[in-house]
Amino acid sequence: MVRMERDTIGEIAVAEDKFWGAQTERSRLNFKIGEEKMPDEVVKAFARLKRAAAWSNADLGKLRVEKAQAIATVCDRIVAGDLDAHFPLVVWQTGSGTQSNMNVNEVVAHVAGIRCIRMMM
Image (cartoon, rainbow, N blue to C red; front, side, top):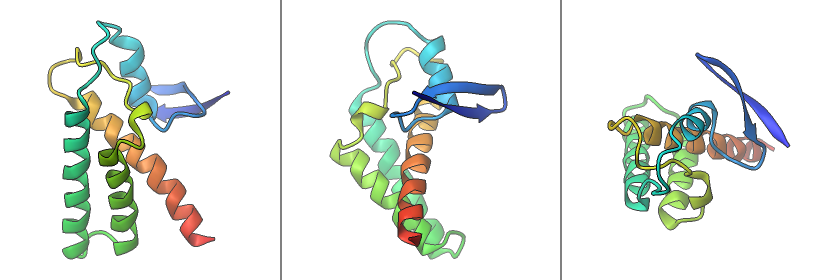
């Protein structure tokens, strides 16, 4: 089963059981170079940064506390290793880490979105 994700390039199919989105899927398909995955330490560092940014923005009144909490919860799960299966990208990308940053963004958004929906029920 797949779901259709959309970005500025268009639609792309992503496996239903994966939490990443269109940009991660494009990188996964376009950078089939080597087997070495992005180190867990890099993914966890991105998660720590995004957690801190969420709380900083909440403190500044730029982000609702409920959203910051949802983001922080997902980031904590990433740091704990609970979502490792959702970071498939290889280290051999374009060199800037943009794809890995987007991979973390997509996973956080997807999982936090599910959490926000459940919080409203």
